[in-house]
Length: 416
Image (cartoon, rainbow, N blue to C red; front, side, top):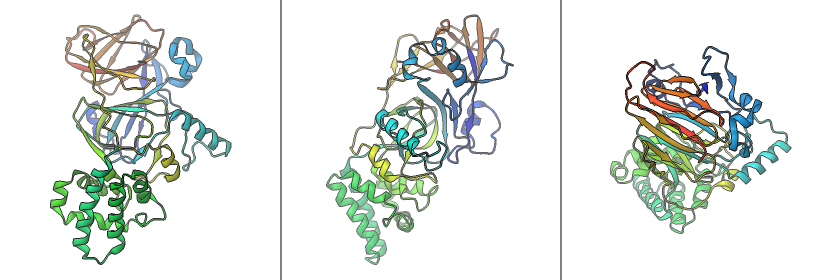
């Protein structure tokens, strides 16, 4: 069993407070976006033997490479630790994005490698050759955009917007009013891809940002429209972080999802999404492949994004947990790489961790004691461990050794 020393990524969209509040520490004063737990080469965890917590950390990917039989077990079929676990803390919207299928990732990575594009280059689309299906479980109220709305519903929003613009400009801005009406008509005809591409076209009218700013200014003068249209209201809120960005209007094409703590969604390849605010446990296949379409200063490749996006309206992909009868809630998305268990530990009574191959477990509340093969690890919120596939069965309890147990929560990730 290994204690994990994990990096916090300071992406600009990160919250300055959510991770610090979870961990019970003073905020750093910088954005703290993602705490990574895993062996992805972008930010591998440092691994320290639980029996020798003062030892120097070894990068987890190096440790696994030294003994894949013992540490990965049946997960060796993936050629790596198959999942990456994060605590994600969004203080403002993330980029509108989608992830490729495994085949798209392999071909895209190979093409960019053959072209000699450095893997760290800012204009690189594919950082690795893996897909990135993912799931997020809310720890606080969590807001996201997820998948396309029914096109007729999106058309209704653009009709309301066109009406507000016509009233505001009184016919003086035919370009913007006409473009908005064209979007509504195209969506009524069911063409999501045309509307998506028109908004993101770098040579189109939305690209300069003036139209987006005019739309937001008009909507702020139309409170009744905002009261009656959640998607337009959401777009105005997003614009505060990304003024002039065409992604503000792309958001109107997408479902807004408000998760309560404990709820989850899963995101397969091709699902356009963006997280807006909140703290959650995010688990994904071990990849960093992201195709972006707005709400970002990073590289946007509209053509490649269109190649990977599924242009169809689908229900919001909620992932309801299943109680297993032993005090666990099991989140089982339709992916091969992982499942997640939530263990709410009311006292010091022990429960055995499910282990199919390697396990990463992270504490999110209280104090958790983990015992495996004569070793003991004590975790407080934000701390985590890695257990190799050959580990003795691990038993988890609330509370520190010698102390009475108090309520605690642990999320554990392993193979389905």
